[in-house]
Every structure is written in structure tokens, then in C-alpha cells.
Amino acid sequence: MALLVQKYGGTSVGNIERIKSVAEKIKATKADGHDVVVVLSAMSGETNRMIALAKEITANPSPREMDVLLTTGEQTTIALLSMALHSLGLDAVSMTGDQIRLKTDSCHSKARILDVETKNIKEHLKLGRVVVVAGFQGRSETNEITTLGRGGSDTSAVAIAAALKADECQIYTDVDGVYTTDPRVEPNARRLDRITFEEMLEMASLGAKVLQIRSVEFAGKYNVPLRVLSSFKDGGGTLICYEENKMESPVISGIAFNRDEARLTLSGVPDKPTVAAQILSPIGDANIDVDMIVQNTLGNGKTDFTFTVHRDDYEQTKELLEKVCVLLHADNVQGNKEIAKVSVVGVGMWNHPGVAKTMFETLGQEGINMHQIATSEIKISVLVDSKYLELAVRALHKAFKLADDPTEEK
Ligand code: ASP
Ligand code: MG
Image (cartoon, rainbow, N blue to C red):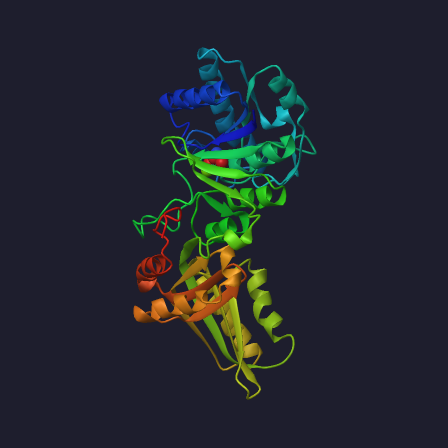
């Protein structure tokens, strides 16, 4: 018998029929002898619909009232699912974030979780009830209703699972797990049975969007085993956990990518201390995220400073750099907006020095030029022209044999 936290996303509770089928799934889990705490999103489209309503009244709605409004989406689904569970003969009780005492800071629309009380939930569980909790919402220290940011129900589920020390936090969604890469780019992409927290963070931040990234960080921090699975299709999904035995990890778990990069270079900057900080501080002040940074000393007292930003931030970053260029007496600013980042990710690469060689050889054979390379313990990222992105992903997927079934005898 296990204690499971099951989170169902917006499409899984998108209409009454689906809510009824989620109730059936929960009934089956209960019949297997498990205790279940359910965390729900609003019906798909509902949060957007309410945001649009508010915008019809004012372009700048009060953040406090916005949170009061948006939390009703989840309050609707928890009541409906509880009714559906009742009609299957199960004892179930819905609870808002306030009722379970999910405490947050006071930052409306992107509140951070401070604490989750488990007393109320545990009392209901002890009586054999299914507890159905509204995701995405909490209550601040000043007793205001708060929300956790878009997609925040994933994080609610993980926080509740951590507080209850649940055996597993299961995120039911419309995909059946985490894949070796985006199946829309590589139809041979394979579902992974397991992936580590570290790998998942790399895969998610690089564009393989399955889970709210914050929920993965949270789960890693509190060591909550996290499973992504489909509410529409049977299957074991993908388990995200710590890898106890690194030796047995696959060398490469997946190929992540990001289409929307732009690259800028400030050339001929004087090579002396504080210059890097001077270049990046106006960009940081403008709240622009900087990603891959490279500085190359040319040996003549000057250096080239290159970095990437999101493509939407390109024009603004270029303007800021032009000013820095004058200020530092640098040579010039160059940029390229049509850049994509491709990364091979795997905790197993630490003791396989051949990964970089295979990656670069593969791209070379396809005639794909790399503009920049960055490495960490568990990934190698390269920048390529956007037009080669799909080709690069497919070629690397093949080179690292990711489509093959790893359980098959070779
Ligand atoms: N309903 C919220 C949203 O659409 C939270 C969630 O679904 O996780 O962002
Ligand atoms: Mg979601």
C-alpha cells in the first residue's frame, strides 16, 4: 500500500466526460489499496478565458483580484471531481489551497510556497477519503489568496507530496512521458522509462516542455519521485528520480533543443578586469536572460565577448551593447538572430570521453557548422544555424542510437 499524489492537468479534466474517467482511474487506484491525494488544474482554456475577461475591463487588473478570480478555475474542478467520485461510491472531499493551509509569500500571481500543513489532509485520509486539492493556489501570510504562476499545479502537487512524504507524485497529462527528443522533430523518439532530476532540468529548460520546471527543482530538492504519465493511455510513463548507480546510466538520455536563440558578439574589448561585468550589467538591469557566454582573449590586449539571449530580446540587447561598445572603446557589435541550440544530455557521459567527438563528427558529416560550444558535467550544447536544427537533432538521435530499445540484447 502506497500514498500517492496524483495531479491531473487541464486537458485531463477538460470536460465532464474526462472528469468521470479520471474518477474511474482514481477508483482503480483505491481498489489496489493505495491512499490517494488528487491535485487538479482548472479545465483547459479556463484560466486563459478568465484572464481575457479581466482584460476586457482593464489592461491592469489588481493582482489581488486577479488571484481571487483565477483560483475559481481549480475550485470548479475539485468540486466536480469529488461529485464524480461520490457517484462511483467513493468517499471524497474537495479542499482549496487555503483549506489545506498551503502557505505562500505575498507575491500575487507568482507566489512561492513556504509551507504545507498535512494535518487536515491526513485526517481525511485516515477516514478512507480521497482528498481532492485545488492546485495553483495558496494563502499568504496576510491571509490573501495567492497563485503560483502559470502551470503552478505541478508545483502544488510536488509540494504536497513532499510534505506528506508520499511514495510518488504522479503527474497525469496529455503526453505519456518524457521522450528522447521531441517526436515532432524525430518520429523515432522513444519514451524514457527513467530520467534523473538533473537531466530533466536540462531537457525542460532546453525546450522539452512537459512539466513546470519549478516542480522538477522542488521534487529534486525534497527527493520526491516524480512520474509523468498519460491520463488517456495506459503505460508506466517516465519516472524522474535520483540515479543511485551512475555506472549503469545510459551515456546519453536525450537530445534537447531550443529554437529561439540569438547570438551577439562585442569585438575588440580591452582585456582587463571588470569588463565582463560592465558588458552584462545593463543587460541584467533590463531583465534579459543571458545564456551561453564565451570570452576569447586575442593576445593583443583585446578580447571578443559573445553570448546568447532569447530571440525576442535581440533588438534591445543589440541597442544596449552598441552603447557599451562606445563606452568601452570596443571595435564593434555583431549579431545573428537565426540561431538554435542543440544539446546532448546524459548523466552517464561523465565517464565516456567520446561523447563530444561523436557529436562534433556527426554534425560535421552533415555539413553543419557549430558557432559555439558549451559543456557541463551532464550536457554538451552547440549553437547552429536555425535552418539546420531539425537535421542536427535527427542526426544526433541516430548517432547516439536513442531509438533503440535499451533492454534488447545486443
Ligand atoms: N490553471 C493554471 C494555469 O492554467 C495552473 C495549472 O494549470 O497548472 O496555468
Ligand atoms: Mg500544466
